[in-house]
Image (tube, rainbow, N blue to C red; front, side, top):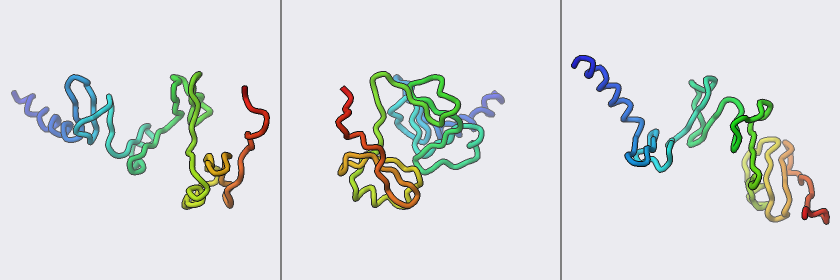
Length: 139
C-alpha cells in the first residue's frame, strides 16, 4: 500500500492540468471538456529549443519544419504545405484594415479586397505585389 501513496500526489497533479473524456478519448490541457483529440487552452511550445520559452498568448511556437498534409516537410522550409485539391488563403483585408496594421513587419503579405491585388510591406510602405489580373487567366 505504500507504493500507492506515492502515486496519489502525482495523479492529483496530473488531473489538475489534463482532462480526459470518456467515449471520445479526448485529452485537454487546461481544458475541462476537450472538443478535439487534443485541446490546448492557452499557449503551446513544441521542441527542445523552446522547452523553457513562453509561447505567445493563445499562440504556438514550433521548432523545426512544419508540415501540413505532408509527413516529410522539406528541411529547407519553415512551412511545407501539400495538397492536390486545396490552396492557401492569405489574410483578406480592405485598404483601411491594411493601413491600420500597427508596426507591420517587413515582408508582411496580404490580399487587398479593395484593389483585388496582393500587397506586401517593404519596411516603409505597402507596395502592390504581382498583378495577376491580366488577360492571361488560367483556364
